[in-house]
Amino acid sequence: MENLNYYLKQARDGHYAIGHFNFATEDVLRGIVEAIMVGTSEGEANFVGIKEAVALVGAIREDFNYPIFLNADHYKSFEKCKEAVDAGYDSVIIDASKMSNEENITLTKQVVDYCRSVNPNISVEGELGYLRGSSEVQTKIEISSADYSKPEEVVDFVSRTGVDRMAIVFGNIHGIVTEQEEKLDIEHFSKIVSVLETKGTFLAAKVPFVSLVLHGASGLKDEDISASIRAGITNVHFNTELRVAYRNEIDKQFHDHPNETTPYKYLGPAVDEVKRLVAAKIYLFMGK
Ligand SMILES: [Zn+2]
Image 1 (cartoon, rainbow, N blue to C red):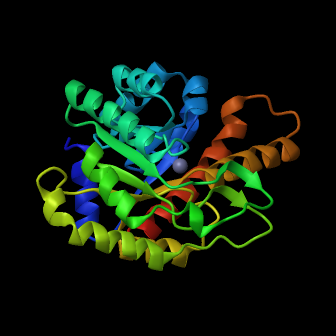
Image 2: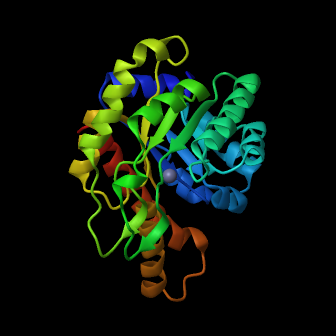
Image 3: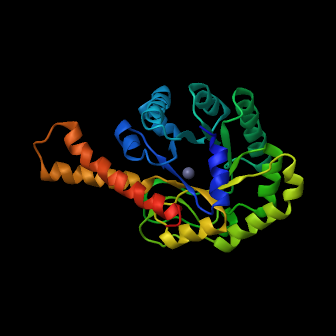
């Protein structure tokens, strides 16, 4: 199996994106197994178990002989990232975006250095800009261009930390909002891509390629996601809509079969819903 950065580079060359889907239970993981990248937030990892998550993904990789990568999604401290890496995660996101730029760079660099010392195949993502929201359904969230990742700061961040991937903020939020339209600022994102590319000569020595990541794809229109991929996004994070589909189907099963107590009989249809949604999103990310 090649490493994650290899597949991200393939995606960039082929103008498509790799999906990232979250799971907190084994059945949902099975439902999204066609995805190449799965992740657990700190909360999800606490629920499923950090070693258990690694073992589950390892078993699927073996069963299907399929490249699938496990990502520690938005881990906030060096200790939590180290815990995931030591347990066998393939990838981490050190999310220090709430700190000052200098503190963010220092902590991210510390995580990059640790990962490189353990295994150079581990892919590391940093985050810059203020990505609002959380992976749930909310009514309204203030979206301001002041929160966006700034092109020059992204270049500085990438060159000083040596990350493989960058989470970019350009109108995206985590979760779904019910009372406003979610819209990406593709023009702003394109500025980041072009600054990264024009400064590429000094990056080349240290960072030949950095993957740009879209978080919070739930609630975005398909055409917005496609436009961001055409502009250079190679990895798309998708969580809240999966949670909603899973939960709604369980709700429906309980309603339709109030006496059912066999877990796989009411969970099975919920997993089918997750599969259906993941398949649709993968087609979208592949540009089909
Ligand atoms: Zn995210």
